[in-house]
Image (cartoon, rainbow, N blue to C red; front, side):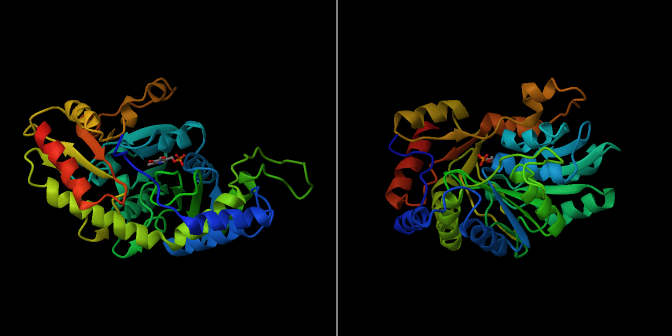
Length: 368
Ligand SMILES: Cc1ncc(COP(=O)(O)O)c(C=O)c1O
């Protein structure tokens, strides 16, 4: 494809950081300074007291759910419109995912539904800042605190997003990030859990590295090998320093798309928060009935013109293995179902020029 959905933004500084970590012998996830440096820099940027680097965003969520106390039979409210990783975190801890339908305008979870879904079994909420759009976290935390629920923010798509000037990842009891190659910043693969709670951070550090005890090789509890390598952390330090620059480019890309797409009948763009900063990880849109063809027809047309696209996520209420799980609760999620049918995201590489966007928007217009 001439226009892939995304290409990562890194250069000589990242390459130099990785090679210099290698020259210092910092390659595994145990020795050297790069991991602590990355954790400190990224947590500091987000306004969290502690960062615990791990191998990817999926295991970050699994670890966070474990220290949040999610266990067998516990129900956890999860944004219906998300990557399966948000629900796997619950599943691998024995909990039951209860999907929360999306809001038709923000595409994030519908905050009005939270209280209707809480039962005595509810233990926690996994809230996703979808495509980089920040959820109204003070409102969500208010509900969680009233019911004594733990909150895990899934910030995999939302590095640097803000609600009233405060960064996502600093609101919940725990917050998880991904540094996969298509994310706002990347370490190839990688993840981090943030928390303000020193005890939870210590527990996660212990669990991520096989739960080694004071007596080496004597284990009180089952741990994991969720370690990030120091080489990746060295790349993460450089990427973190560049994060604001990348976000500015992402927002600029979105504005340039918006100028070209908003006048096309049937195209619906996301409602951005007045009180927040949407970082536009990917440029998404929904196709309404006024657009002449279906979303899949549009994707097929764009593919023939060298333009790669992705659908939004298949919602958690439709996932076969979750539906088969003992204790499964049926959930009705018409908005998340519709997003799966009519949502699409476009090439979102920040180096796309105005001419590239003219071409892509022109092809969308001609498909309608
Ligand atoms: C919302 C969300 N959560 C979690 C993940 C999982 O992160 P990773 O791929 O690093 O495991 C992703 C995507 O990769 C995601 O988009």
